[in-house]
Length: 253
Image (cartoon, rainbow, N blue to C red; front, side, top):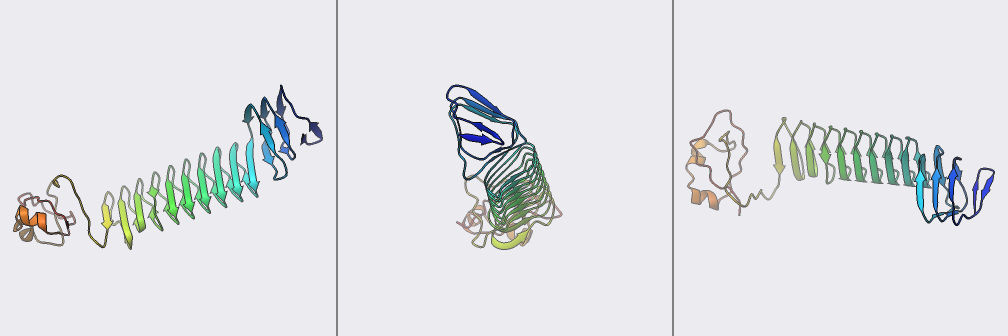
């Protein structure tokens, strides 16, 4: 049996029921379909809803303990989760989906940007269409992606991964092994790996833009066989072309 305000609704076995009130506080059993058109539907811990057919809820949905669905429509579930944006969804423990069409899940995550997604623990996605996942990651930039642990992607369309990586510039990519490292300019690819970087497969090709941390003479003195056998730490940044330098395969294998 269900109680809607001052009305009492018995178990319906062959019909549909339309509810215009706000709260379902006790048991409601419907074997066909149910349409709920109120501004909010709250299923209390003491009540149960059993629907054997189709369920349509046109308002907000709050389920669990201490949840709030403020956007119209929105869905909050779990414990103390808040869905504040239009068409937002917050689930888990103390999550917040504030942006329109945003989704926050896990524990203590916040999705503040429009169409943003935050998942994991303590992650935050504030940029439009941004995505933060893992532990304490942050995606500030629009269309930015942060994953791993304690990473930040604040540039437009930037990416940060691993641990303690900071992609602060637009279109930058930063991955770190846990060493604090960040981008220094737009459209830059940065990787910090204490035990080296392996690039396997075919040969490495490029436009000869430049090499740093070693002279052109040092690179030119290497034969292809030597280049295959030794590791060369290379960063492709030089103000002048070095197209006459043979491009070998540089690896630490």
